Amino acid sequence: MNESYLHFLWKNKRLPFNNLQTIDGKQVEILQVGIHNLDSGPDFFNGKIVIDQLTHSGNIEMHVKSSDWNLHGHQFDKAYSNVILHVVYEHDQLIFIEGIPIPTVELKKLIDDDHFRWFTDYYRGNTTILCGSFLKHVPKSIVLNQLEKAVFQRLNRRMTELDELYQHGKIGFKEVLFHVLSKAFGMKVNQLPFQELAFGIPFNHFIKASRKQKMALTFGVGGFLEEEDVKGTYQKELKAEWDFQRYKLKLRAANRHGWKFKGCRPGGFPTQRLAQFAAFVHEMNWDSDIWYLPAKELLPIIQTKLLKPTDDYWLTHFDFDKEKKTPSTMSTGTANTIITNSVVPFLWWLSEKLSDNSYRERAFEILQLLPPEKNEKINQWKALGVIPLNALESQGLIELTNEFCLKKNCLKCAIGNTVLKR
Image (tube, rainbow, N blue to C red; front, top):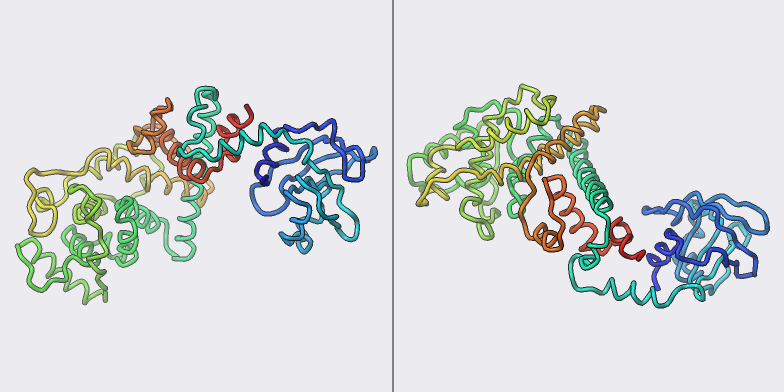
């Protein structure tokens, strides 16, 4: 037995509520089961019960055993002083609040053993999406509603990350955007070195620098211009500029070996992304506030700037002194991924900081305008018949996979709850 299952039974009223008694034989009538609390504190807030014709309002706590109350240290926590009912699978110890026994209900003889065995077997499934074989029975409205909630959760988590950066780094709004863009350019493989790059580059100087200076600073701070014997005119020019800027601004170069080439396609090598990042920052007008524009106007502006070719050298080279057969630029899919992981969370965060909900609506609209991502996680959902129509829905599916399915948080998911209630 586990507490999560008890929470599920209580919240969904899968118990004989007309036959509940305290351990000392008093009839218990449940008027309100309460609001399920997913954070610290009692399990259900604002419950309402009747015992011996007296109505009690307050919180309800659940445990596998009564003694878990003391085991979890609730006797020292004032947050539990308003518990009106202790619901346990097995009663093994009388529990008191300020010397008064807590009314306790034991569920051991009331639980449907067949359902518990099915419930346990369900959680032992070896597939990522445990509810996969039951999805056809879940109403589409519930799936779409859960996807929207998952997107909110995903963006709120990103908003918290940006706020920590803003508060602890003591930086302005534009520099927050600079950092979130840098992280997005790193994708999954080079996210960390790109974040370190953003901290190593002096933002205010960088956005005012010439295109050549931006390239030199980007590759210099990234650690790609440390060799003394460089080959080729382009690399020599960047190195000369970097040596001057490093001395002038007292900058330090990162270790080039921190960048990962393995696991990237040639078009996604860190050298390519660094050049594209420097070019994009140069194309952006950092003195203009374009974020108030409607989503349908803002999105193509950002896409166009991302898709503009970088220096000619990088159209024909994978790395310094390493040519490639055919010229290439950033793909539309990559540009859209960068927008999804930078512009969208930035607008969501900006909405909170400026107390202006229009930015949040703009972020949502951009996700609705963008096509769905293509990756293995999305393919798993497609195989089960859940086909995302846009980036909003695919972002929801990614969040569902990462934060619900992989962590087996089915009881916190509307889809999982629908399946488990069957």
